Image (cartoon, rainbow, N blue to C red; front, side):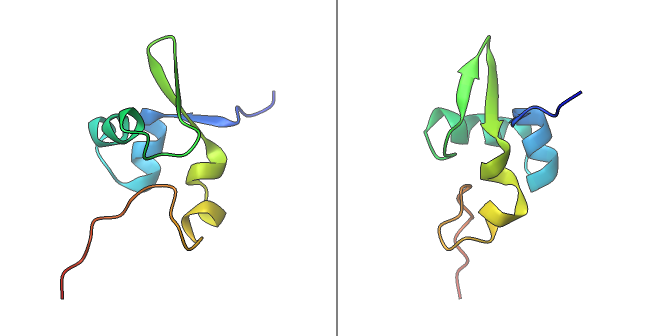
Length: 68
């Protein structure tokens, strides 16, 4: 069986160590590239979450600003 090209908001939350509600809010605001809502569930492209996407200069998931 082939893996889905999408994570659920719960799966993404575990990977990113965020609360699922945080992931859903980011999806609603359009902050996660390619996220779409299907059947009441947010689906997030794996490419937006997997390590190559996270290591790019512009992260797919916004990070909290760190103050010096």
